[in-house]
Amino acid sequence: MIDLTALTRSAQHIEALPASVTRLMALTAGDTWSAHDVEEVVRLDQALTLRVLRAANSAASASAMPIATVREAVVRLGIRPMVSLATTVGVQKRLEQGLPEYGLSEGELWRHSVASALAAEAAQGYCHVLLPAEAYTAALLHDVGKLVMARFLAPDVLRLLAEAREKGGLSSLRAEAELLQVHHGELGGLIAQHWDLPVRIVTGITHHHTPELARDIIADVVHVANIAAKRAGTGYAANDDDLAVQPESLDRIGMTGEGFVDLTTQVTMRLEKVLAMYAS
Image 1 (cartoon, rainbow, N blue to C red):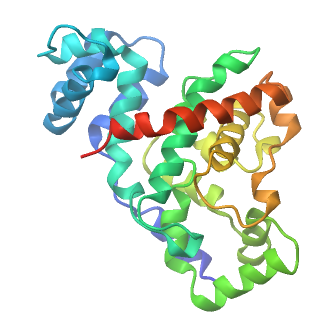
Image 2 (image 1 turned 180 degrees about the horizontal axis):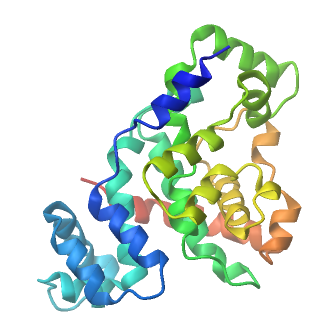
C-alpha cells in the first residue's frame, strides 16, 4: 500500500525543532532547573525573545508596567506558560500548512493543535488527579505525524481509506492502522523521538488514539484533549467514532462526563483569544 521503510525514513529526517525549544523541553522535564536557566535559553533566541516580550506586554498578561527584559517576562508570564509559549511559537509555521489528505485546509491543523493544547492545559480544573506538565506539549504536537503521512497518501490510497470509513464503518485511526499498517500517532512518536523530546511527550503523541496501551495518563489527557478540541469545532472528524471519547480515559484522569462537556465549552470560548496571541 505504502512504502513503510520510506515513510519511517521521512519521519526521521523531518526538519528539527528550534534548538531553544528542545532545550526548554528537556530542561523543564527535569527537577533541577531554575528560572535563570529558562531565561538564559530564551535570551539566546532573538525571535523567541521578541515573541515573549510581546506576550508579556499584551493585554492578556494584565501588565500595567511595560516589560523590557526576558527576566521581567519570566516573572510576569510564569515559567510553565512561557515554556508553552516558546514551544507553540517554535512549531507554528509547520502546523499552519494545509493537509487536504486529512480534510484540513491551510491553518486548520494549527487551529486544532492549539485547541488541543488549550484543552490539555485547562483539563486540570476538571480532574481529581494531578496531570503531567508535559501534556500541553504532547497535545500541541499530537498530530505531527500527519505532516509526514500526508506525503504518502496517493489518490488511490485515500480512496481506499475513505471506503474503509464510509462502507466498512471504521474510525479514521483503524482505517489507517489496518490498511497502512501504521497510523499517524505512531509516526508522530517517531518524529518526536527524532526531535529528542522527553519520553513522556513521545508517549502522549504515540498513543493519543490508543491510551489503553500507554500505561501513562499523559496519553489519556492528550486523547481527551484531542476529542474536546474536535467537539469544539476544530480539526476533522470523518464519522461519529472520531468524536468519541473513551470513558476509561476520563476515569483514569478523574474527569466526569459533565466535566468533559464543560472542558469542551471552555475551549470553544477561549480559543479565539488564545489564537490571537500567535497572530503575526
